[in-house]
Length: 425
Ligand code: HEC
Ligand code: HEC
Image 1 (spheres, rainbow, N blue to C red):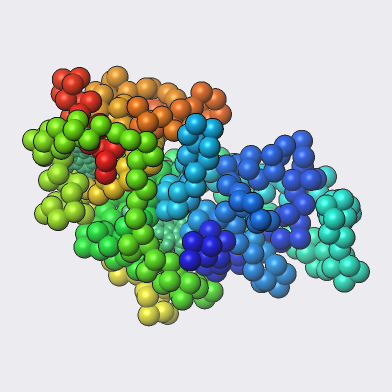
Image 2 (cartoon, rainbow, N blue to C red):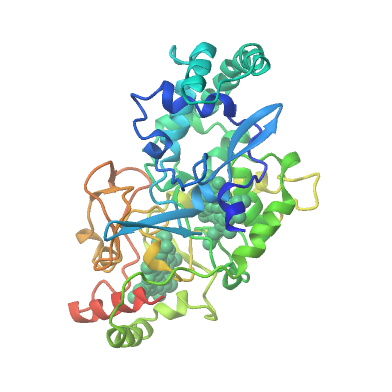
């Protein structure tokens, strides 16, 4: 099943890049992609031609698409060793940079049928006569047209703060699809990828970062549609299998021994500070929304999902049994379980706080800017150590790191105990 999660199709290849061209891009654009698609943070495994999160399927010609593993598989490095974690937020994946590369490459002078054929031959997979004809007379002529349309539909992306690794815009792709012209304003729906394990404890309750949907089915299907699937090609069977599998898929255990006695002390503080009342399975407030007036975290994401969005969401899947009926407007963010929280850095819905230690610091002491997208795990502060790559600026629209001040006023020793407890979740 995890093979399917990482490489299987969910029906998202419809507008995908033709595979015969895509796989030669790292050769043709070797200057831009010295590490191939890993340059964008895609993970690879031995014995697989495709990176994790990329599937191939024939729609006319074989095309590449996204699947659940694109955004929901990650890795951490510890003592020089890399460990894959299924269901974890793809912290290093820079989806925006990848999409921008594909749309730019498609109209680059270096990309010609001859260049693809030459690269394929150099890579030991010389195309046959028919393949060459298809490439020259079917695939290439359409590529320009297809990509021109895509480029237009992504114009809004360039007018907002870059997502960087580990994030995407949860609202504006939909708005573009519905003709709501996101290019005409500057509203931001950027979110950190969430974890998707342990869905059973998320069955009853309103989830998505802003708690806008109470149906697990709709959360799964909307994810597939957002990943590029079309209503008519939606692989219901495949998505249902994944959904069943995620139901009890366990969060990863903290990768090094932690101080259990200290964690037990931390649990007491956790309860005293009422963290459990919002975050623990079984708590009345789990899966409910805390208003931004109380919470104080960045409001862009929750503000973007307004009545107009909800009205359009209710038209999704109109002709199908699964038509969306469960979207609503909220004014804050959902109280979610903290299972496997150590592997969910950076923190908050917009990924604006790099470590758990930083989240326990008062907002004005949290880093105003930091690098993200690295895989080196720091078991002390609980987050990723990052000193180059994409610089995240919390002063930009949608990137604010304010709010969620719970626990930030505790004495240092109590914070340490609380942090130790969070490692155990
Ligand atoms: C392009 C990246 C991407 C792909 C592909 C993707 N997701 Fe997601 N997923 C997200 C983002 C981003 C969110 C958070 C959206 C929000 O709340 O604003 C999310 C949220 C979810 C949630 C809700 C999590 C919660 O706790 O609120 C579930 C469940 C989920 N995805 C499952 C899936 C499944 C199953 C697939 C494959 C069918 C999938 N996702 C494919 C990016 C993706
Ligand atoms: C009133 C409800 C409430 C209380 C009390 C509360 N939290 Fe939260 N917590 C939230 C909400 C809502 C979010 C999401 C905020 C956002 O992303 O903007 C959150 C986010 C978090 C996150 C980050 C989750 C992620 O995936 O990035 C952690 C960690 C966390 N809380 C720990 C704690 C701890 C520890 C305490 C107690 C000291 C606590 N919380 C108290 C509601 C609460």
